[in-house]
Length: 371
Image (cartoon, rainbow, N blue to C red; front, side, top):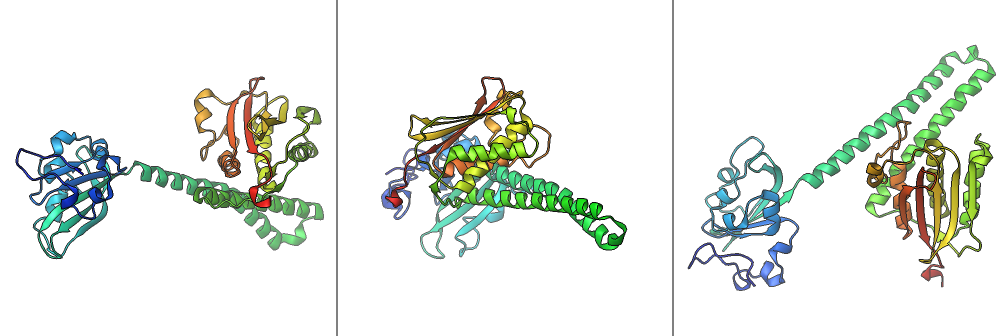
């Protein structure tokens, strides 16, 4: 199988299975199918393979690279502006070297890429027969690093306020306990308790994110009465001061059996109803019905300003906030992770009354392991 292109008539620069035992050819792989850039140079230092990913990452045409000296086809510099091929000298350097570890290098124009190289020798200390270079785009890594940095900054910001409050009130009570009345002490302790709960919720969110991102979110499935769960959350809002007339609950009967993690479903309902009450306006409508796709569908709608069309695609991403009213911006990201862990889906759109509408579906039926 050919995985390279000859650089000139008569030149032996085509890499074939018989000349590459144990390599890509013997595995039946096409270099153009690889997600990372692959550049191969022969024993003379001329490029014999320049795959599609390498073209995309470097913006160098394969026709221009094939047959060219490696240092010209792939002119790399380190972060200090030094020519990488001159520093590493793969063909004339130490005979015991067989690789270059992955490191950040610069392409012409300053674009940063991750590059590693392997030297294929005819013997442990023999001459270099092939130089195989792997190139990876750094954008995905940069996005991950930015996300981690933003998460740290958000957590630090959200923790600072409640911890400052807890520290302030406890220090004041310890130092001046006798100066306060019982009512004043109770008020300060209630504030400390509320702030401690806020910290606990933030830690729980961080743990949920870690489990969702790593695929380790555990579900303890059991029969769930989704209609009763909706009713409990509505009553909780009414008990906290919301007008009962603000909520309209419509539950289709009968509903099919739903096997889910009741705590996780409570978390989803709590977040969606809290968002509708806090950020929406008018009546909050909750519809629970069976779906034609053998699932239970729950729709939460409000009559507020809704979500701008340009923001619809970012609603379930980390740190998205519908307003500047605080919060970590992690709730809907966690909601989506919980729903998808159940095998369901969640969408956002515009409600008939003009506000936001969230709809999630959960598959129904008895789990196979309980049959």
